[in-house]
Image 1 (cartoon, rainbow, N blue to C red):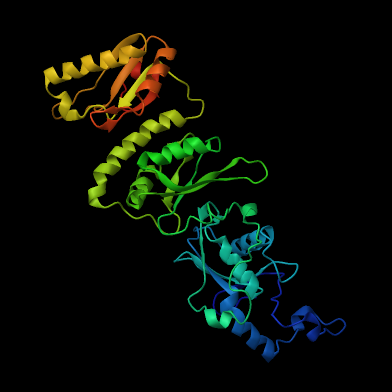
Image 2 (image 1 turned 135 degrees about the vertical axis):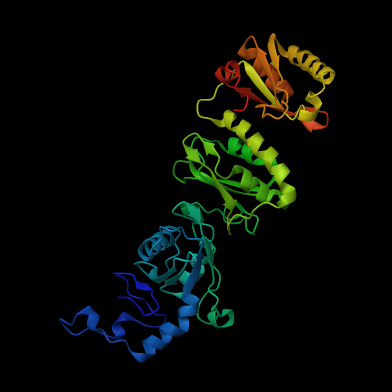
Length: 386
């Protein structure tokens, strides 16, 4: 049945009212279930406990509807052992505001609503949702109706939430990283994220049975000021056949401040290089690409340019037979691909691998060098902006 407030009664569920028993209103033989009278005391009890039996769910995807939300939360409540009002679905009613992308999810009991609060940050249809108390929640009154906190015995790992990691990395600066290829290892994901600084917390969510990645992670940076920069730089990046979705877990993505834009541009360049390392089946090549070694300004003067070329030949030659050094230069009034990068071509992969190990992370002119393998075919064709 549909209620006047636009909510949807979930078919096949009967709200259980605390303190009431089914035997209080026995049905006469042959009497249809729909003929059960709603007694005034029952209606009053239901209304009095409703504020403590509802939870607010925010950040819903546009595809969400009453039935999908009800089914999902009933399933996850059963999975974590949060159903305390007996067999059947925990959810009895859902109201959705599609425009503002939130829902009120009504549970059978006060205790089940409190257990549902532990589901904050759970992934629903590919996106994390917020689970909060509604604005009409009365804590002092609710305390007289049942437990106000989730049970400590809930099996949150069954739905990919781990206290102290995904479920515990709270606050406005928690980042959701979705769309990760399943073959990415924890180390690879961390390496990608740590381009922007050390992490205070990190959790790659894995399947409880197989131990395999579920394709999404959560993190928090030690330096919270890089949160928006990391989100903007990583969001929309293509990784193999996937596209990353990176944003603050508990709110919409904020735009970076103007003073952050130069840092963001540099970060996006570095991420583009990092993608080369993380592509499926990527192998070592004979060509190494170095960044954070030179600036465009240092390449304008011919003498300075030759000095830099000589330095690179000397440094690169320490690791094996160096065949070629390419340092793209700026062009007047014309975009020049690859400016700011140094390419070292070796006679064999072994030398290039030694060079990457020896040069990656080294300080050069106060900057930390990033060294990655570069596709030989693109290098041979003069494509330096991959």
